Amino acid sequence: MAKRIVKEIDCPHCKEKVELQMWDSINVSLNPALKDKIKNGTIFDWTCPQCGKTTRIMYPFLYIDMIHTFMIWFGAPGQCNPELYQNMTLDGYQFRQARNFNELVEKAAIFENQLDDHVIELMKLSIVQALYKQTEGGTKAPLPAILVFRSKQEDGTMIFSALYQNAPGRLIRASETTYNTIRRDLENNPSVLKGLADGEGKFQQVNFDWAKKAMTLLAAQRQGH
Ligand SMILES: [Zn+2]
Image (cartoon, rainbow, N blue to C red):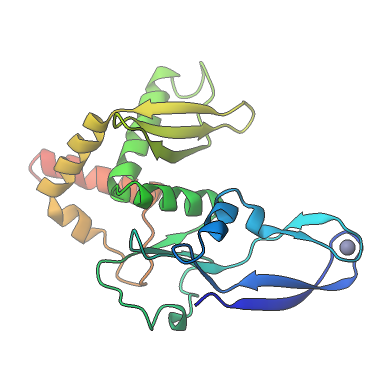
């Protein structure tokens, strides 16, 4: 199911033509060791046999988790080869598109914690809005450039990491109550999810842009429009 692909590349250090091994798909349920290497990024580290230097080279692949039933396409939208999943039973699977490494790791963490990424994206948006108010639009303190879901603790607390352009990152905590409130809000307004379903591709993009649209729709419905 996971196929190795060998590609010839020029080493960025010594410029020698050398072979690079990649995967077209990785089933982390069958290869738990590869899952750790994806999460810490080392799966993309490649050491040149000629000069011995290590380079991080990202490439597209399909991330498959059979235990939590989701797939993430880590590559250009619409470019996932259906042959990678056509022999699988796809009942109950969620399909997502990751635009970058942070999104890939984040989506995996959300689904492994059996959470709904729509709710998480709306939580992230409300955290950013609260920070915007607190910092008066970023004038009193910097605003995070990226906010990423990391984990859910045993007491239900959700941990997010805020990454800044020119400041050290920090952890932000949010309660399970907030999560449940947003989830109920979405459940009570099913047309929001339907209205924003991406009909174009199999792999949906549920991200900050999605959350902004959803928040607008939810606000309109609350006002009875
Ligand atoms: Zn080299």
